[in-house]
Length: 124
Image (tube, rainbow, N blue to C red; front, side, top):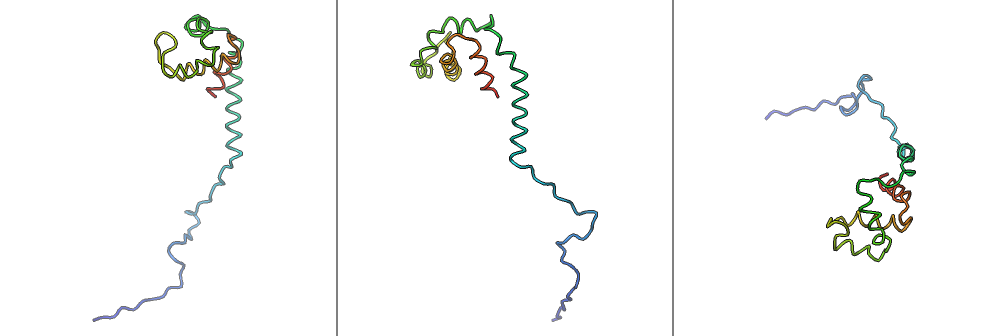
């Protein structure tokens, strides 16, 4: 049997990179405050862009059918949970949509400002 001799080396371990061309500098991680500032800036820009919509009225498309013709249904908040078990308007089963309409109607009854404002807040 042949015995093996182990040579000790004075060089650095192989895990340490001594080549200056391949070493990378770590970029600082962004802080939570920076992330919130970016999010806040985007939210502000979106709000400014869509702010003119708050002055608009209801449209002639489906707003008459949904809001004006059924305002008495939406103003009564006791109908909130009823919307989860039955269709409210035109046999459409949209419980979350009807729920948001009822919340909007609680703020402003038939005032289109509140419907537009809450819609803007929901989407931001």
